Figure (tube, rainbow, N blue to C red):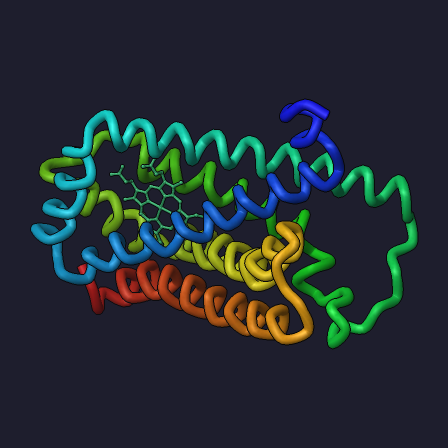
Length: 214
Ligand code: HEM
């Protein structure tokens, strides 16, 4: 089989979904760390974004990879979900403790679609608006002074956290990594990652809304 044939095979598609998902988990951690500079005030956030944008072509390349990863992840996820449903309209009855269905695992397609909706709202509001002044700090302050936006952000972040809580360890399974000892460890890592990413991102709209930050 040639390379394209291998990637398009059922195993190849699962691996592609796992790899692109892990790539996104890496992005989330870096993005969260960068966003924490918001808590240090406008000058610190402007300095961080200037540094980021001074990467120039490298940043454009990273953005292109992010877009490519998102497209591949979404396409493979939708194809796999439709294939699974066609093959087995009634899901297996397997207990969560045995790596079977949990609320997070059975709602992956929905938390994924919610994350996509959240991303559209987020990029329109934060990425595709011109910075006002030195950075987008005033945009963040204004957005998070609106209770509706704060609510939408918290719902989106909850969906992201749920998605990560299953997706992170499931990605390793798709890549053939994990055994009796390794998989429970990866499951614990997934839970911790979801809690850190969820609580970390949620703290920003909450603290800005309460005017504790900004
Ligand atoms: C409340 C928390 C968040 C804040 C305050 C925030 C803030 C920002 C800002 C200011 C930008 C524009 C950066 C720039 O180019 O100057 C941005 C871009 C972006 N954000 Fe967020 N973000 C948050 C949560 C998230 C989450 C949870 C995700 C993923 C699900 C995400 C995904 C992205 C992506 C993909 C970009 C575009 C990256 C790029 O093209 O350089 N963000 N965010």
